[in-house]
Length: 285
Image (tube, rainbow, N blue to C red; front, side, top):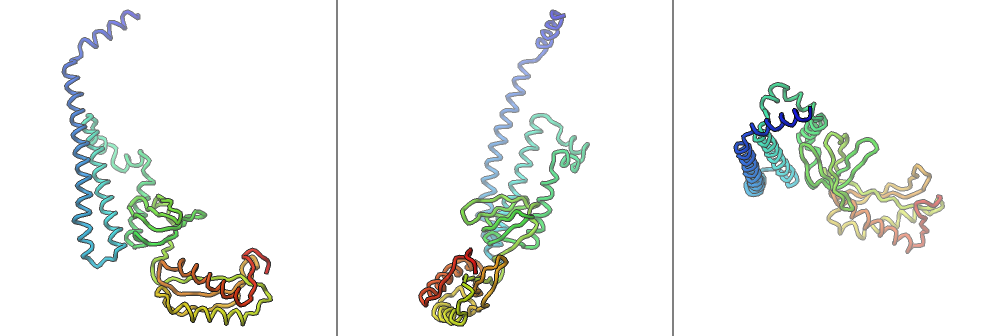
């Protein structure tokens, strides 16, 4: 039996046209190398096209800078996706796989589901509406929420599949668009810097108000980021029972953090200078 099997394999290998097989393999390897070189050149061409033609054209439109960057990144991503799709299609065609027959027989939707692309399609749909409704643009300061998961930072890129956000410590988050359920955009319209100064319950509130007003009169008028005179909201009590004094400052979008830290220090130093004792945020009122 073993001898018969050896004869079968021997006859099979003898019938092989080795010259034709080597030529076919060599031809496919050359075709793949040329295809990859063409793909590399096409990607470079897409990059130049976007940077030299599309991006300058958008600058001549009425779109703001953030929207221009968003559209530029989106167009470049779409062109790259198209190139990758064509690359995969041609590789399969060079290898001799009946790609067209597969798509025609199974249906594009069936192939997509079979490949586990439901999440990908959800990303595309959600990304489309995010872009259509201009929920965010490149350069916007945002908070993205999905249940207990919250990501805050500056938008780096907006695509039809993912959104990239860089947070305060420099971490770059790649967020699938299907996971974005709530977009809180901090760069649309004027913002407010809410400053809470913790106080003891027995503190003289009239004296505190007078000191805060003096700081506002002395420093607020010199800040171009401050759009309105600071509003003194007065004493408040937090959920954990902490007694504090709140001031609201209307500022330009994106400058609320700078104004907050600057004026918190000014209020803090002025109150201490006038003999007002200040507890830590965790001290009992």
